[in-house]
Length: 312
Ligand code: CP
Image 1 (spheres, rainbow, N blue to C red):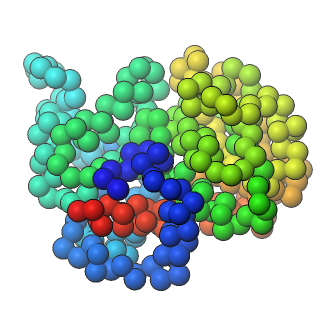
Image 2: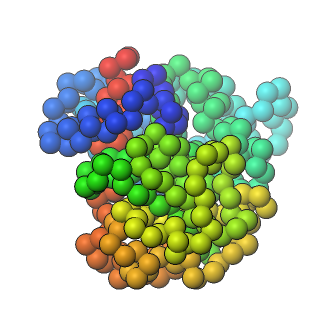
């Protein structure tokens, strides 16, 4: 693997999931692979799981880790070509990406959507410019439109908990007071398209994701109907995609409850707002996989870093 920017950078998802599950049995077996190699993790936004699990993954592989909160500690970066930089930005990404490449063998980038300008967000300006100007591989730690490490994690978690040949998996929208990006939902949809499963997407009308991503996917606006006989229910809020970045609906009827969940397993990428997105009774039950998912973030990152290190 050269870079990990999207779930589609994986050659065979089922094969990689099996390798990740295998690496959990002996997480430090490949410690020699990363010896004398350094990963730089650049955070333009907050994180708990991604920051710690990616560090843990790199340490398991014997790498050195450098972490920088670029958003508030780095120079404000310029991304446009030919700009006269006499305003707020202090350093061009052309230099910054090449400079970080002098210190690191792999660079991880977290840069969320700003949710103001759809076209700008979809251009993935931070991620793509680092990819363009860095001389080392890039790992997407959640960009404007995708969170492929989370999607790989979710594939691992489904595989570990699945008891059926073809499980039913539902991705359900949930209410949230703040405008959240589409990245987690987008990558979950992309990941499910690579799975042998009955996949249903449910959300209020008007909350459609990018139609290019959901082509051929079953969308059911009736949440109760969508949840019938589900084996796995992944819940996530996203802001409006059509009226871009707006919160148009906070209907608490879309909150996940124990009653609605039935016998299904509950999934969420975290962080989650209790009793807004999902009720306590779900999160505190043995149907919740959220801590297993958080644990699997390490093994998703580790298998990705391993594949990249093998090609260095
Ligand atoms: N799920 C996830 O990416 O968590 P963090 O935002 O805490 O990294």
